[in-house]
Amino acid sequence: MEAQEFIVMGRWLDLASLMLTSADLIFSRVSEKDLECSFAIICNLVTKTESPDEALEMAKLISAKVSQQANDKPALRLKILFTLYNLLENPYSRFYVYMVALTLAVNGKVTEHIIPSFKKIDNFLKEWNIGTLDQRQLFLTISNILKENKSSAKDSFHFLTKYLATFSSEDAYTLSEAKEEAVRAIVEFVKAPDMFQCDLLDMPAIGQLEKDGKYALVYQLLKIFLTQRLDAYLDFHAANSTLLKSYGLVHEDCITKMRLMSLADLGSNDSGEIPYALIKETLRVGLLFILLPCIFKFFSFLSLCYIGVNFTPQVTDDEIELWIVKAITAKLLDCKMDQMNQVVIVSRCTERVFGLHQWQSLRSKLATWRGNIANVINTIQANKLTEESAQAMQGVMIR
Figure 1 (cartoon, rainbow, N blue to C red):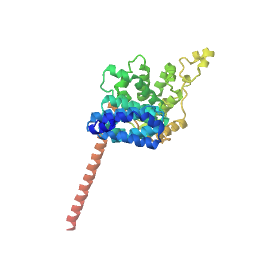
Figure 2: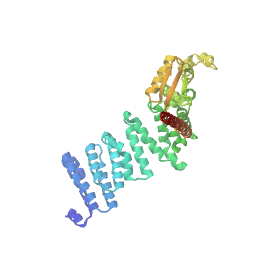
Figure 3: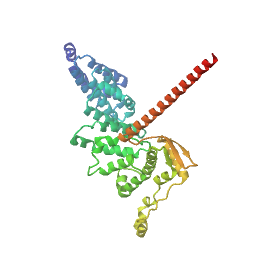
Figure 4: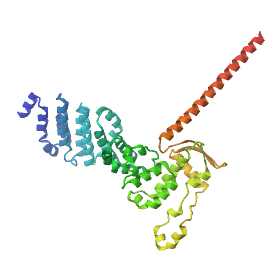
């Protein structure tokens, strides 16, 4: 009788609340098919109301009940939330249910069912039209989900940077909320063996670390990877090896990445050529930096021998070409090796950062290409006029 009264009076929120009171019993006693049908009826109530606010309250009520006990039939619960999502018309209500679905997927350990939807996030954002705070919550939640999947490291980093980018115009107090995630972004970038370009240095959320008492060295490490070369990293490691280990960074992996990024930096010069000798100097291997600590502990006199000695064996020509091939494979360089003249001829290189200097360089190159094209056009037109004049003179002589 009570339910019938709610229907007659159009009290859809109260009806939904009434039907959900027995939801716990339904979950434990009926088949999954019957459970899905039952909740489809409950979810359909959101289409009855004409008030967006009431629809949102109903969505909150239903999603709260469904997301309880996430470990019990989590995939089915997630499916019910998707059904609710599709029945809602109000954009914010849809966003709310989606966020509940993310939490349920994590708690129920069924994230594989929701990860495919991340490819549509840009379209969702246009539809939802949510504010900055909601965007932050969304991006960080998605990044954390993807972080647990090693094959999704790049995607996790992508959403983490989107999260950090939302702090572009905030005050210092608000920026401080992003410190831990800013550090995480730097560490993930340095760790990633296949990421060589990013715009982290342009983000205020990252920039705040430069003068931070706790994280200034982490910022310095990022700056080395994006603006300097291998020698700067080796100096940094010599002074901060414990710090690197505390963040799970492997020295050998960092050297490998810095060699590749140093090669890319060499390729960015305007001449378009890199001498083998310069590569040898840049990619040097410093024995000083890889000596085991125990040597210094038990043979302290050896440390005296190394002080002031610039003992840094260099890579061979074969090793140079191996690293060039690695840089080409990583799509950092498009180049040819001139073994006779001991130079690498670069046709394209990846910039580690793309700031004012890179824009100015691009503008200069475009101006040069434009001038070259204009010269070619002028030459063609001049030749065409010459040819037409010659043909005209030939016609006069024939007459």
